[in-house]
Image (cartoon, rainbow, N blue to C red; front, side, top):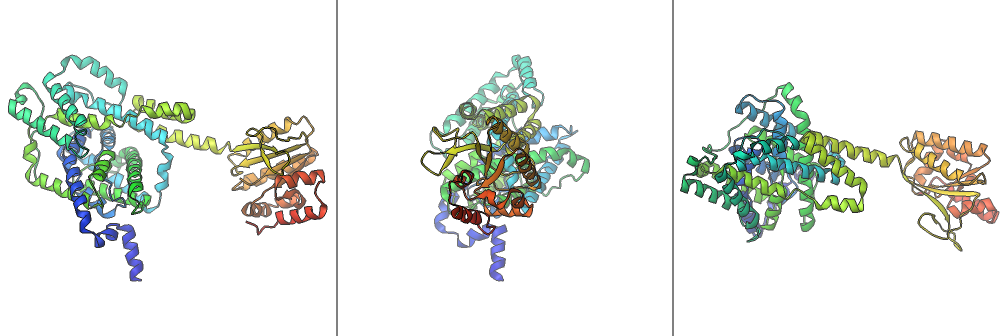
Length: 583
């Protein structure tokens, strides 16, 4: 019993699996990675909070308790959780629809959004709904991410140029606003921002773990303080509150929660998709632990609860931070705990150092981060390899750019489902014919010089026969029947790839065999699996078709028609083919 309870605890609290056997040899890697990611999180957290429409301090709050909670409940040992550009933009877009009247109300809505995301992700994990994220296909995520990255980048132009721009997620409106206000560009601010971009973009070439964003922050603060650039109009962060985040409570107003629910659902799915994708990539390199999608949902839900109750906003696993965490030597989630401790020390003792931090530097951090999310190679690749996926990617991309983030991701999900439905209604079907000199039948569209007869139609259905596809299957069979010009006398349904038959499929099979019988055509089946034979028995289809018309393979079915097989051998074959116990 104790062992069962221990296993159950380890399943739902994964830190208990590795912490009791934690090795001193792992501490060096975890310490190095934790400090590196912690240093990276300081400017990133502040920048992403600004992108979400919040004061920069809330980005630091979002990487304290949430990191520790993920470290306790998460199954990935390298995933670095915190604010990310995509979720930050979605947060801003979702809260903007409620038109908050004050910064206090805006923060309350951000906390409520984090709480809702936590509820959705935790609930999905408990109900084992991790598979739902599969409805976000790769082309949809790619198109959505690239479009959202462009929108995020454009949203930072106002900080980089220091011009007045409206808060919008429609690219056409943003371009018009930029064109109208471009003459008001503040060149000193722009120069600082460009310098920040250069440092962050090319600093990584010095060393993968080089803290380029932090260096950009230090340079920006040094320039402002050294040359008194605030007097020249450079906008700075100003006072950053010190101390740990106090306990906060989200709003439980049903009307607000109802309005925030669609964007919370979007953040939950997109955030989990991004987080789990990078977690799988890193886990594949280590292979010394297992990922659990449902437990990851629970862990991310707990992290978002931490944000909701400690003045943060929605968080998820990030690509760049996780890659840095792994490269810096992280062995366990102890690295995340070390990162959180570093942020806590910063909140307690060093927030005053960020007073002169230019907003343009934070904009540079965001711009460099999202530039890597714009993938122009994938559309080119899909155009050459898969036109349908290309269309889906481009549709999601254009809808997201022009109609907004929320509409884009919902449209992408709908498109994914429509493609799934379309493919489900059109299973692959093959017309088969005999390979000369053998007993083997192959697809006539893939093999040449097959022996195809006018009086026999052998066809294979690759998939289930059910309500969604019976009309397509029948239309395809009818098409092939017409090609026989009235000479058809035998139809053989090869059932080796049929995995399921529902009540509609069974009813339709009754109809088909009855119609063929009236037309003087013999209907038969071959290669029927045990479970499918059970279904045929349940619906009395064996009786309808006739035991003598169910065969072990296509050659036996066609041979029976030609009376080419010895009757005794044929009887044995048919007896074997109709046994319901064969699997």
